[in-house]
Image (tube, rainbow, N blue to C red; front, side, top):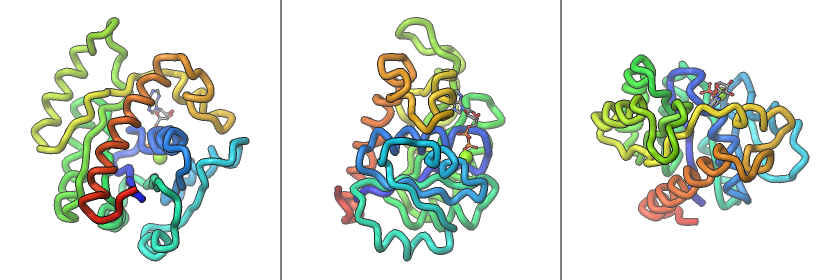
Length: 213
Ligand SMILES: Nc1ncnc2c1ncn2[C@@H]1O[C@H](COP(=O)(O)OP(=O)(O)O)[C@@H](O)[C@H]1O
Ligand SMILES: [Mg+2]
């Protein structure tokens, strides 16, 4: 039962977007919204499909709530600017996913999140999100530069960078994910590749922590 927490102290970097999309691709998943803004819950309320299952709550009750969960996959969306909550999430998941945009201020801002996961000794990975779409197969220079910059944090960086693509937000309007809204589009393809990579990272991490799927 791998548990994945999306963490970033900065808002607007893609925690909710990625949590929602990955939870749909995970199939039989429980999506937990810990952000008081409840954006993931609002998305789910407009959704027709039964999965993912949805729960909301606070980081302080996460540990006891997780003890009762039977879903094969758990994804946790979190609030920005909430260091204590981030610590509690990091301590109760198998894998932390840290999304960041490729701009320098965003790349620097993940230092505090990296420090939190280090203290918790939880495996964590960095995902570059909303990067300018590259030409054909080559990624844009800013993406390559951002990838090099975040390598300094010493965490695995996802080989798939998620492009800035309108379909990723449009799909959410009526409770869908891009894999349902435009399954053959580039955004859906990138999301599937991202999920494959995260799936493997989380499965490995959960295996090491004794919580294999
Ligand atoms: N890859 C992307 N392509 C296009 N828009 C994106 C992408 N990632 C995030 N966004 C948009 O950026 C805004 C912030 O994203 P969100 O997931 O809410 O961030 P967070 O949960 O970290 O605050 C939203 O309007 C969302 O639609
Ligand atoms: Mg959010």
